[in-house]
Amino acid sequence: MTRVTTKGQVTIPVDIRERLGLQPGDEITFEETDEGYVIRKEVEADRFEKWRGVADTDETVEDRMRDLRGDLP
Image (cartoon, rainbow, N blue to C red):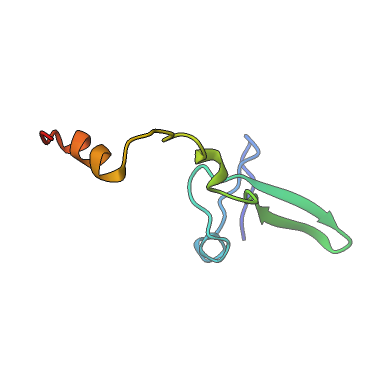
C-alpha cells in the first residue's frame, strides 16, 4: 500500500514503474474513471520531433565526424 505524504507525493511501486516504463522526469496524468483513477505516462506522438532541425547543416556526416574528432582534412 502506498501513502500520500504531507506534500501530496506518493511512491509508485517498482513493478508499476517498470510496466509503465517510467523514468525520473517523466510526466504522468491521472484520469478519472467510473472505477477510480488511471495513471498514464505522457508520451509525445513523435518523441523525435523535438530534435528536428537541431543539426541542420550542409556538412556531410564524414565532414562533421572529422570536425568532432579534430581530424585534419
